[in-house]
Image (cartoon, rainbow, N blue to C red; front, top):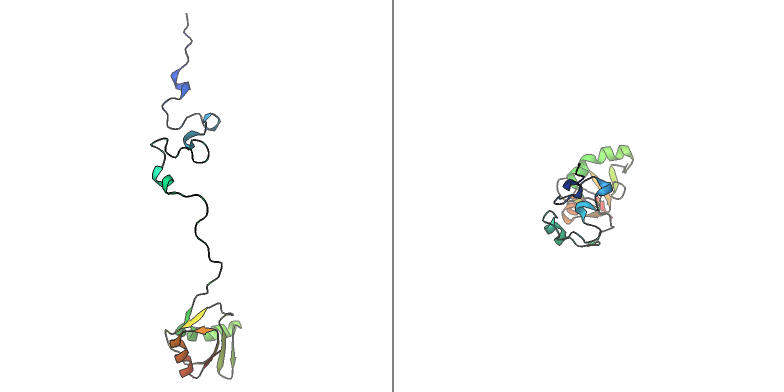
Length: 138
């Protein structure tokens, strides 16, 4: 007579991830929804879960902060910016609007040999160097 006994493998006991793929898994290693499986098994990543907090944290500044430009770099780029139409050259004086070249502030590193009429912010050292070369700051 033939013995018709169910194999133990069909029960899937003692497996880390209940096998058979998605259709038989019973939520598998995830353990369910929400906070479930937070401390059920050793395979769960407990420390990373314990440190996690739900929801948003902190804030994101919506103000776009434009980068600064050194005076020496600005002096080197004056001709290129004039050709692009972002800087005007009238009677040997370059009219620079920092908003047009997408810069926030002129910093004092480097030197200038050109007369610059600057519209925007500048550091104290940059102001001193621009005025020494015969330029102005508005």
